[in-house]
Length: 325
Image 1: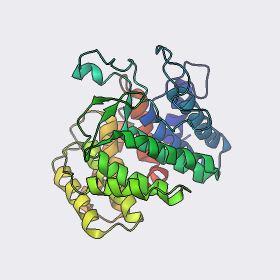
Image 2: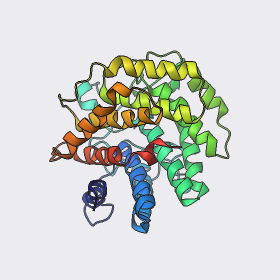
Image 3: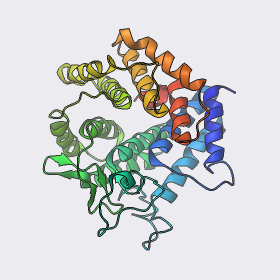
């Protein structure tokens, strides 16, 4: 069994997907996991990994597409037939902040709600599964999620985090790359959807081309490179593509691969560098991908962030399904 296979089998077991253990669903992590299971199924011609991808989508919808067990509201956020129409919960441990509760920056990281950039990750996972299984319902659910995500838009800006019912901002500031994320992802969904999403794409286009892209965050740099590669596959105009790549270059030069922090953030950069290779760009930094991955393969005895770390490590080892559209 390869390292990626072992990581994903353990993840499925530990999070209750393929065992009797209590289910543990988290939207960002599970989106990457769907892509990993598809890649492993294709690579090994293994039906069991295909079924894990299908089961994971089903479990996410039955868990994060419903209200929390500790919430007086119960049942679907939308419906069983259209489980994403009103979005999906993040999957945080604590319930969302109530209307009359004061804002606490530290606690807010642990509170539930909805994140735009998690919804976009799930859109991509649904598109991937729809194409792999040749089932239109997954593409439809991705398009439904595009519709739900409109709630994040306001006054030519975006909220970073909304309440579970999408009616009020929990963090009113905008995620730095959320407009770019939306611009790229909506185009991917539109490519395969029977629903026309041009208006949503135009809105994101307007916002994405007016934001500051440069960042020092390794995950943010990685996401820029992934976005650039996806746009390159869709023949994006060279001026905007170069702007994204220049922003990534301005940050990556300050990254020291021998200084380590959160694994999933560094591995996100490694995935981005793999995307840059596919564009034949950022050659001076290509070795950094190997250095990051090798370090975390050999230092993967995680206690905190275990689920997301091992899933993103697996993605860095088998990145094609996540990167290509």
